[in-house]
Amino acid sequence: MDYYSKINYMNQYMISKSDVMDSLRNYIVHCEETQEEGWSENKRKVILEILKKFSRCVEELRFPEIESVDWFYQYMWKGDGIVLELQHCDKAEFDEEQGLVSMESSNSMVLAQVKCAYLTVEQYAEKYDVTVTAVRQWIRRGKLRSAVKMGRDWLIPELADRPQRGYEPVTYSWQYLSDALLEEYPFLDQCCELHIMRSERERAMFQAVLLNKYGKVYEKLRMGIKEREKLELALISQPEVEAEEWQQSLMFVPNKEKIYYLKGGKIMLEEEVRKYEDTIKMMRENNLEIHTSNDLYDEDGMYIWGFSASMSSVDYDEEGNETGEAEAVRLDGGIVIPSESEFMMEMEENGYTSAAELCDSMSGDMISTYITVANMREGIKPEILKELDLPEEAAYESSILYIQNIEAEHLENLKMFLKAFDFVKEGIPASNCSLAVCLMSWEQESEKAKIFLECGWRIRSIDQSAVLVYRRL
View 1 (cartoon, rainbow, N blue to C red):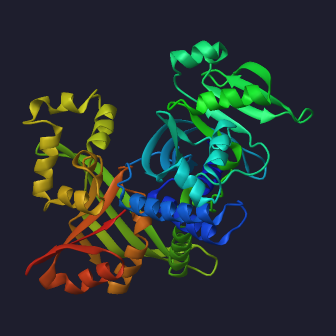
View 2: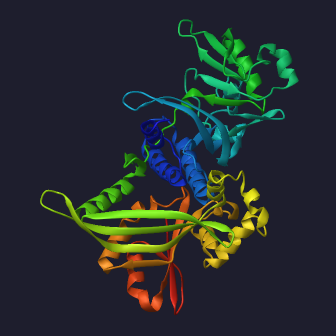
């Protein structure tokens, strides 16, 4: 997808835990207020109970770490509950007005689900004030498709509403069927999906479309009421068959609260765009420019990037020509402690085929090397585990910018430099640099440390002689 298609995709689909939680919160409000779905009050009560329980379950869930936005989250109702799935977007097409035309997805996996209680036929009849005979007729005629056969009797999900008049189109799907069912209905053998709908011209006739495992039409059938009822009852009786009524799939999905934009060649959230524009405005008003540089060097057998940055105030004459430049802030002696993946990319450019090849002459493997470097750098890698909430393996995929010295002519200059730190980040020679850490003398640089805290940095550790501050990048 190009930038604009990707932005539209990100603005329509849930790609983070916060997206899912925002959507669930708004969906609960919708279900409390709307009458559009035509639910009975019994079903509305059950839906709200399930949604609130599901929301708590999702909030406690640890979501997988996903680097690509091609993966998205989707929650949907099933016959007996609600599920949250992670799906991969294989292809998305948008029209000229950036509306979604089509989307193909695959590799879905269930992350969370909450199911409702099941009722006996007698309990369901009492709940909806009908006879037991009426409930059994609804099941036999294919009107309570989420019912589950248990021996000679049936259990009905509490989510199943009282059937409405008329015929509701349905899709049945399965992975396999029993030999007994295939013997009675051999045309189901090569298929895994069945759509049934009423004929528009002949109200007593029904159309059935069978799809194979590739989603292609395998066969089309016409059947009368008795044939259709018998086939549906046979399918409902199979525990491996899942029924989805078409109305069930048309669920309300709240609009996303977080909107993405393209700014400065990057995809940003709305609040990031405002911060970006405020930073640009501040730098223009103060005639500021930021410069960065880096170099790769060997430190005791470990390749490390050196990094430096500066912010300068530029003077111009009346005609707009540059007349001078005064350095206001300098970041010296920065070190980018690389992740294993970044390290390997750099080594490939220098003729090595793998990190292991380079490490043949070193003691220990790559992980041991990074642990050694982390211990030399005041335990920075453990801080990644804590701050980024990553498992240990993933922590070593995050590079760190370690700042050893930063000089500023005035504290106000330092504040402007830290506010524009995202522009400093652009010069860091590591695409996955996730954390910046700065060590300062508390006795000599306490005022400087306070400026860091005002600009959103946090204290990692502090003692009588030094303070270690950090921020996520």
